[in-house]
Image (cartoon, rainbow, N blue to C red; front, side):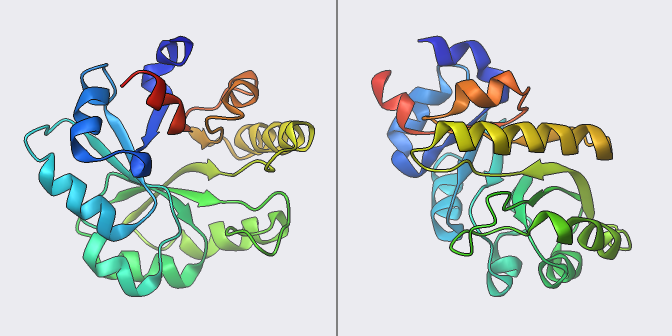
Length: 197
């Protein structure tokens, strides 16, 4: 399976799988797992606690009222999108957390993430929080529009370079090949693994 060539870059979007299926994926050599929902991540982390080299990523929107519950259970947060959220992370996180700012480059009001014109202000406002280790940016492409998705991914790659970020998180099962073209560091892949388990 071609996608397995990119094991180190893949964050398995494990919302598609139960714990037993996740173990099968783990045995393919995958170590990064991403959940969209707080409760799902906590449940799966507990049931897979014997696999203690898994890195846990929260890849869905994090509500401020859920921060206390989850923030010391994850290794990466892909969806930082406000100073209000940053403030809560600072309040409850024990060690610095690797965070990515979620950008809504499509500027679609139905999607999470900040618009590009808000990026500088958010970056500046979170500089004072020592529990936030800002390592990069995350975005989502446009559903059923690979041309528009390519424009979005190209822009995120350009922002990585402009701000000298370590990582960008973009690309899912349907558009990861475009993300690879623009050197995505994290590919959030889920449904493709149904073929191998």
